[in-house]
Amino acid sequence: GLQQRYEEQRVANRKRSFNKLKRLVYAVVAAALVAWVALASPLFALRMSEIRVSGSGGQLSPASVAKVIGDQEGRSLLLIDVAKQAKRVDKAFVRVRSVTIEREWPRGLNVMVTMRVPVAVLKTAKGYQILDGDAVVLETRSSQLAGLAVIESSGKINSVQVQSITTAMGALDESVRSQVVSASATESGYVSFKLSSGASVIWGDNDRPALKARVLKTLLSIQASVYDVSYPLNPTTKK
Image (cartoon, rainbow, N blue to C red; front, side, top):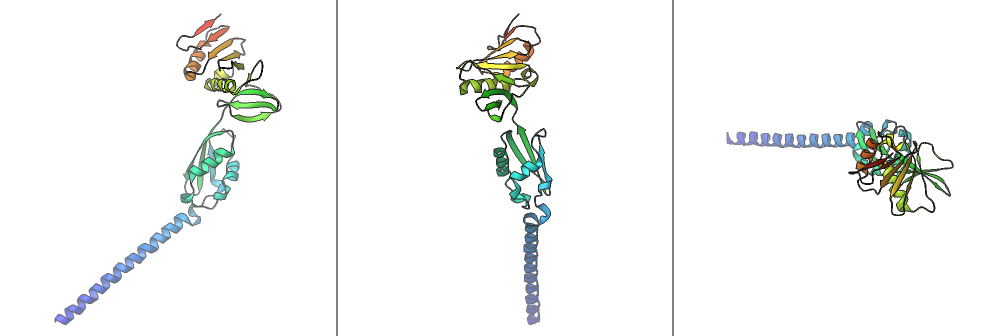
């Protein structure tokens, strides 16, 4: 009767409670297992042998990157702060302009770099400094590096002059830059070039350098002794 139904209801409630507890235990165990696989198991652990470098043109090897971030080996990719590791790589190599790192599942990293481009040579008491477009010294050599424009000055050269020249050289198309054999600038940063053809380029200041570079590339199709792009909207040439 009533007592039997009460007992059946009590047993059913107990079963439901037990089933709820069982499902909760299963869920906790499953979550713990997933967390272990993701964060602690070897499945997603970084291997130095699976670091890939792109964009360096062979100047930066995976092995050299591995030396910088080697302390991350064995860590789960989920725990690696890729932005922080990118900054470490950027700081370690002067020729690297910027770095982005992406995870490559399950155990690798793709290190994507933009390299600094040498644009000019500055002779100093310590040797020949190879400079990029930001006037960053990429290396100092005992001899001049062929194929780069030499920064010339009649006396002591200041940082404004050097920066003005490298900014202008960095703006040039590679095909035009390779024709520049020397560059100079006034103390206020007014730049001019000498070309391998013997012609001169009056560049002027570095207002609108990208436009000047495009205009100069077009003007070079005309034979002239002087190319003046100091006012790029009104360029001139002299025979």
